[in-house]
Amino acid sequence: MMKPSSLRRFFFLIACALIVTLGITKADDSSNNPWGIVLSAVEPFQEKYSALPPKGKLASGAFVGYVGSRLTVRAVVSAIKISGAAYIASEVLDYTGYLRLPELSSETEEALEKVKIAAKRFVNQWRIQVRHYLNPDNIKAYIKKALETDSMTTMGLALGAFLGFLLG
Image (cartoon, rainbow, N blue to C red; front, side, top):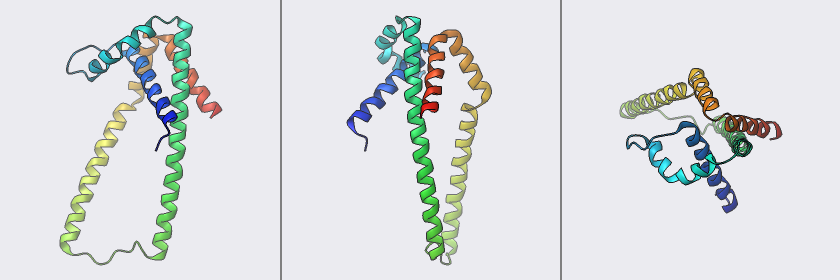
């Protein structure tokens, strides 16, 4: 359970990230664009953000980058710790013989095979989505567009993320 202060910081970071992202992408209000709904809710913040001088945009981008990188590092370290503990626990359970399965009936084997196929499909769809979104060409195009649209915010975001990773 997150503490209230952590929860407030998290929602503040999400709001800042949305403002920066919307300032860069300039989403339209069309009903088939999910960003259009978010834009109508965040528009007052975006107007205030647009009125900031370049140094203010740099500072806000640096803040969002720093906090985002710190949250990312913390989440990754926690995931690594949990994965390590789960692996050690599975090795202990295997050594004690707890994980050895008894002979299965043919119906159970068929059901397990169906679950295995469904899991493979899910993992493959997830892999394809990750490959699409983490495609270096897509990332380069997004960064180039962001630099053309709002270079101070983009540089601030990169600087804040770098400092967050460096000082973290």
